[in-house]
Length: 179
Image (cartoon, rainbow, N blue to C red):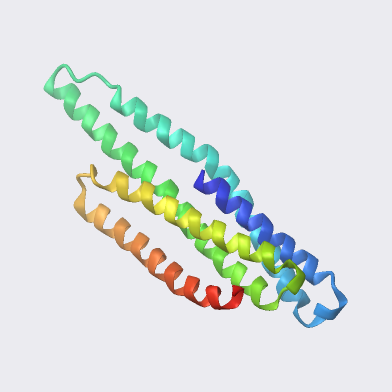
């Protein structure tokens, strides 16, 4: 769901950028708006492909949990498979959060320099991006607990916290622009 939200936000940012670029009075920012629009389309495409990756990662995790565990050897194999599947699963929402933060940065550009008549669309993109990042964070945090590789979990949690801190900082700036 978070990937779909990010893709939707990216589509809104792209639309605002493209429509702004087509307006004569926005000639000074035309190139930047086209750059933002094209990057947003690329990120939307990436996030749409992640929707399938997320489902596949979840299926692999479910398959690992359903492995037999009758003997100690089977239990070890099962636990190893679960750990691998968990790490792969966590990578998906982390990527979603990274992409959604980049979209949030693009949204800042269109809200600052874009056509004011499209400000509600840009503001909606901002809110949706923030929700996608927070939703991805919930998924990551709930999946990090069972991971036994504490160093890997720590590094991943640090990456997430950096994205969340940057999001919070940018969110404050954007609230002032949207109000």
